Length: 127
Image (tube, rainbow, N blue to C red; front, top):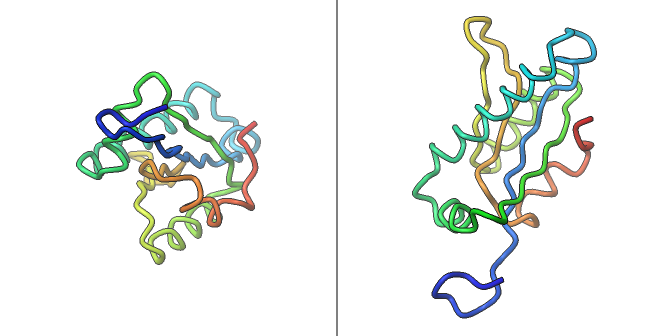
């Protein structure tokens, strides 16, 4: 796959989304509501970092975007991950459901996988 006008192979950019699994398992949220939270966070992360070169390259690959949805067991884990990402300069959006004001998920801006995978390697795919 080539970068438009770049002449070389493109990097694999990934947008990671981390969703609280307890929303479904313990709090009995409908699956559609949980998916909606992930969509909100992913859209917000792209919007907030729209002018970022990685985001622009990711959006230019419209038909081959790559997202990975992971699960955090609860709000404490999600908030801790958000703090760690912030401390390490990893751009993301922690989505807060309103009016409840609870953290439901977070989404990173698109990054090369190797840049952010060390922060996410302990999380499992969302089921």
